[in-house]
Length: 392
Image: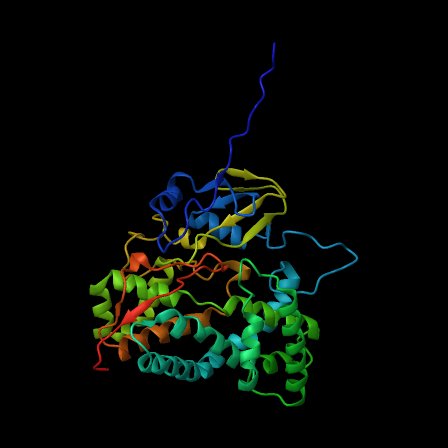
């Protein structure tokens, strides 16, 4: 007689379908019916998928969930960086945050506005329909990060080339580009020490009390470059406004509502169905699910932003929403996005400028037909043709 053999159920491949701008009803429904489930990620490895707000907050803030998926050998300790945990992460973040305080953000704002205006000028002077992505959404973060880092104008074309592969799925670890970027940043640091400016590298190098080595400051700079290269929420925001023309018209009439509208855009929209994978460092329970040390976990904040236990009518887009709880678009806990204020500023100034300077702004194709990128870590709309009236 043959003995019975237990067969583990086959895990479902995640994402369940290609992302094209909308969170599927199934995924949103799982917030309540199946907030913590086991899936197979694109790399073929199993992971816990966490979708509800409380679960995401726990995974993102609890020190038992680590960003360090593979521990380095003890005889090769890594440089401290933003992707580590505990004291190492805190030391780097303390230095990094010097560049993103309220006074410095106020200093950046006029320059970011000028860059947005320059790009919109080029869109107006160019062919119609204009591509919102190549005309504004893609170049603006690159221009801003060069301003912030302090990259001279003469070096920017070369600098852009090095950055091109940083957020690519197929070429994420381009060693040659990373090495060239490292050498360049090291040279810039030497120049800033000799002649400081008002840029981020100069701020980080101020005084001798920051406690980071030059190599760790370069790692910090490269980490922020990766995180700040793509701000897809501008395109996603324009897309959702086109889907809600009455709210778009309201913003045109009442531009003072734009900062609040940006918060609703950040809560409601998504640019991908993926997020960072973490690893469990000791046995833990999320909701009523027990996880073991070594398990991988992916909490998806933009799905959690639709949790009906936290947000009233979460699947309704409403620029007049008065939130009682903060959304998770920029993460949560110790790894909350360091460049949040700068990214929020870029989205706000971009949308405000588009609505002010391009009257009658409208999509040149149905928004449901816009192509989405699947070759980038952060996804996003690949091309977004738009038109407007000539009476600007």
